[in-house]
Image (cartoon, rainbow over all chains, first blue to last red; front, side):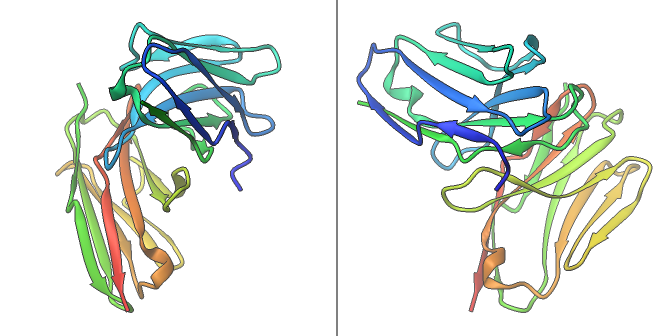
Length: 114
Length: 109
């Protein structure tokens, strides 16, 4: 168990809708990262927050947004959903903000857009 | 920018044999190289990592070697077991973490 909790585990929704994915980082970790993994694909970095502040941005679409709250949990908001947004979305956390720090991943939210 | 290439994409080995997965990187300033294992239905899990000031690191049946001159690093798994079946990802980091495409390791009984 990594200590990172993601909810919900599964989400099925229709095109054009909006969803929110939630992540609780491991106790003591200040950094949260969001990744997208499409079927049989690698990990695409979306965005990183450190102690409430946006720290780095990857290939995140304008339709997607995220935030980290004072209690350090994070939410990823996906809007105007398209079929191609169907994927596994992972949250990871680490103690530090730098990129040489081990990441602890949750078990993901599987999003299906119909 | 940094690019990390990972080979092979699929590797099938007999139980008990060794498995080797290789990654090359392009940014000579990269200084941190983790390996993650992803089992079906789970998130990736760090299994071993190496920093650029070290050439090799071992943890029981798993080892990672780093060749800074050639800009490549490899994961070695000895005495493979069925529970080693998974997808393995390498990554390289300088100012951001760049991931390889993954290797599906199949252990044949």
